[in-house]
Length: 265
Ligand SMILES: NC(=O)c1ccc[n+]([C@@H]2O[C@H](COP(=O)([O-])OP(=O)(O)OC[C@H]3O[C@@H](n4cnc5c(N)ncnc54)[C@H](OP(=O)(O)O)[C@@H]3O)[C@@H](O)[C@H]2O)c1
Image (cartoon, rainbow, N blue to C red):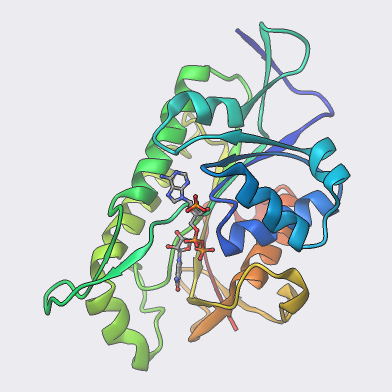
């Protein structure tokens, strides 16, 4: 298998039926980029994009949807590659955006009040993307952007005082998964890793949905780094998605490589 870089670059999306990533994908397609996406239920993704105002023609000509679960390495490889010139000539995505996450489960438990239906989903998704890229043996390395959370920093407190019990006690279990995802991303973003760079997004509590018409706009967000975090209570999913589009996809994201970007209202 050989690889190439040409002008038909594309962005690979995982978790694009989630609010942040769906908004990001919508902006990406609106701007004319080519994209691929993994979806457990492709019709759900298509319907969400149509509701965002995209036409079926735009979806058909710019987006390739691969049906599958993040546990399926073959499906991940199909999202990450395109056979542009024939079966032995494979192009790899220039950027990967992942907003994969599980569904919170509320428990009648004092020690574990909030768990996730699939407690290792974020780490598993990232590990499987790494495995898929390793097996593809691509010469060109994509960047990766993942959606993590505030409240997982070992460097500086980035959660406002009144949310600290929620984040550090009630959400402690889901945060173990996010920390492991961040570790895998960082470990594989060295000069020899499968990623040429990485951006870790740490939004505050997500509110609203993917509807890009209802966002407040990415320029109005407060944005910080791990060392100098932007501390706030909530942020809209559509605004997080728009920020990723404007600051990572459109620019290539290099200025944020290696950063843990806190985003809040
Ligand atoms: N809730 C918060 O306040 C908060 C705060 C900070 C960060 N976060 C994190 O930010 C990320 C984005 O959140 P969001 O609300 O925008 O999206 P979300 O609703 O959590 O969406 C999760 C996405 O992951 C996909 N997914 C789950 N399991 C999968 C599997 N086994 N195989 C393939 N895809 C799978 C879902 O697909 P389906 O449509 O098929 O289910 C969906 O597209 C999540 O990781 C979330 O935990 C959340």
